[in-house]
Image (cartoon, rainbow, N blue to C red; front, top):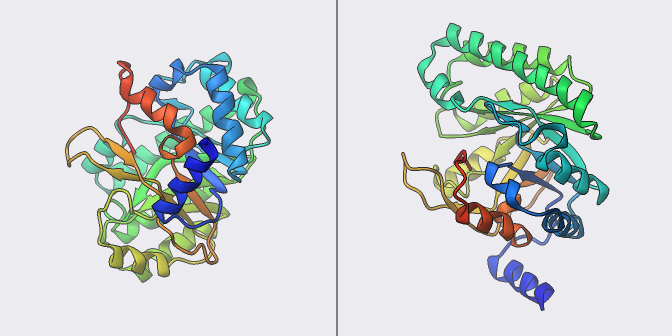
Length: 292
């Protein structure tokens, strides 16, 4: 019966039939209350859905490292790895990131980014030394957009910083970006292609869940992307208003043709088999980051 309901969900949602080959998981403090048995079932079903890689958005959020090397997150990810799932591990996220990049001029932004990259490099070394998980890539959770990086000098400085950072890692670097309509689609595509040329896997969020841009505009941005840029298919619909803590409901990813692009889905908690994570989050009294 559960499999039948899942099939109906996918059919009625109009989602394309290709699997969620890569899926994002964004750890929240509330997730600590899920049992190992629950995580086991979640990862088993994730693998059954055709997923081969889990992109963990971060392993440290400010002062929280989700229990460290012997904590709930590390334990859960070991269960995922036991199901044959590959792991792209997120590094460190500054809770004030979006506020800081709003406030800084170009020189200040470059200095801030350099400091954050240093903290993420230290995080990567800690994960390698203590967590002892097999890693197929590293994810930098500081998202890019075409508003804060509209000036050419900012984009050029960022590219140099990211190339240098990627060269210090022992597995490929992943980073994500979203569009708000400030750069022309062709210019945006060229920028992201140049970042990707530094052996960095760039993920462009399709924006279907947040609805910042009309569909025709989003499609224009998607069509201008080089084939090397991955597309993140958002599996949620934002229901919170601007300025409110982020809140969303599950939504089937848009039925777009993958074409030449790698694809991934955001995120695990919004998929049918991850519903227990979302329900637990909304029922929890634990203070948490509210970010999509």
